[in-house]
Image (cartoon, rainbow, N blue to C red; front, side, top):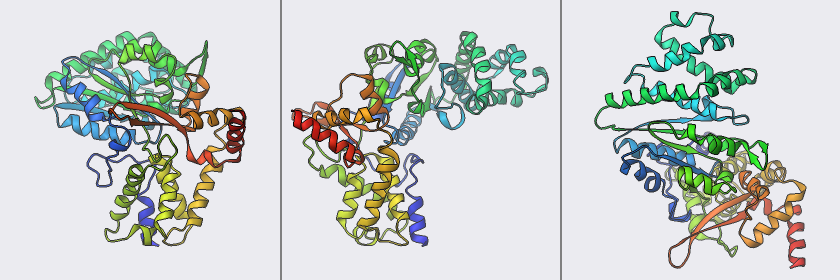
Length: 443
């Protein structure tokens, strides 16, 4: 029982791996060779004399946070002071986000990390000017002047906590930030500039990385625009105005929207972390990708017991493990979820085919079948046959929901090729098979 419990907890699907974690597996070669975050974003920051504002995206759960933590480590070793924070854990509510929430989250985290290097007075003066309105939100019953410096700084934390947890206070806070965003950003930039002068010579650049913004749920705003467009395009002037390097995570559907050209003009092209390829565009099994998923399992198991044999002691045979890997579609979080689900089906190792099939069935019926609307099955069949998606909001929505997955490959001349497929868990549904048969019969 202890063995299965210990291994079960090594497959936590929601904990990104810290830099240098022994469980990390480099999957660059099976994601396409153009997605090296350290090379594309890291070197842009290190080489640039001026602040950069860059975008990073990919499906939720594909491994972006793990790669961003490795980027943080890389930048720290190359003369940068990094302010990394998972925004949805302490600052924003992914179901309801505006640009003001992101600016306030950046302010709170930058101030918290750099308060020992510069006076916070400029930012505290901004707060004091808003105190009459903010005090009414019961953030404090004490006059601002009577608060200690630490308590004044902590007001920013109270603001972001209220934004995330108390919907009734959001509009008041947002109105204050929106109406006075210029003065807030000016104060923040002066704080950043003053802190930069006091940083050790080995940390000459400040980099801010607000993670998890890709989780922001799209809200229709009319005229074929969503809250994603509003935040990252309409208010790009505010998001790009910080006097330091910034790496924003963004929803993958935005990167391929009709606004992609405008996005590129503002931020340059987003860097994308694709899925691990488990099959090719001809629907043939891709051994190198499956080997990487098998290695991910091996590394985590061997942290508990280095001598254990995966295909006889953890699984009943290699085919059982391969089937589990194939059904993830190369999605790392789904690998973790299926592993934990399969372990819950047994009292002890090895995991047999029946347990894997039950884990697959539960994920298919409990998550992916419910994610597809009745009119979308035909669209999924089209993607499966073409390995492509039209530039259409309905298809981008399927991408955001991970019903459609993005892959990268290279051609004979090493040029990157982007292609798409449906999630393997969807492929086994009767609704999809019916849609596919209709499409084939009409061809």
